[in-house]
Length: 171
Image (cartoon, rainbow, N blue to C red; front, side, top):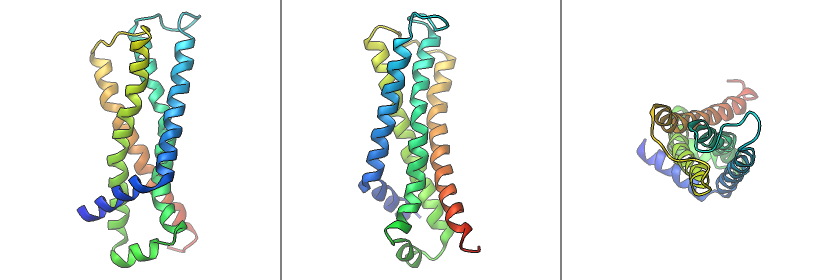
């Protein structure tokens, strides 16, 4: 099983679509960070230096969940598109092991992506003077919960792709 997961991680690392989706996730995160920071001081926005603004900036990293879901989908559909699914299932006849390896591979990559996306708005917010990093219970919950949520979205993408791919195959 470890070899299958390593192969999936290598496949994710070497696929251009993965890098393109990570670029889209970063672009979405930067855009939402700019929107949040542009609204500081306006009506119904948290004040500068508040924990609410810090949490709102940290929440902008969540815009990367859709690209992470698509990475999970593409990890499966890429096999069928490039016609490598047959050789993968011949090498490992137990389809469940292949699906599990894809899910584990994506679940390992997604939290790393989320940490990178969380660093971006927090760094920009800190350097711009809009927030001060204070560690409290809410911040700890977000730091732990966001990577877990990203992993769930990646696994959901793998599951959706296999489910939709098997609908027309009659079981």
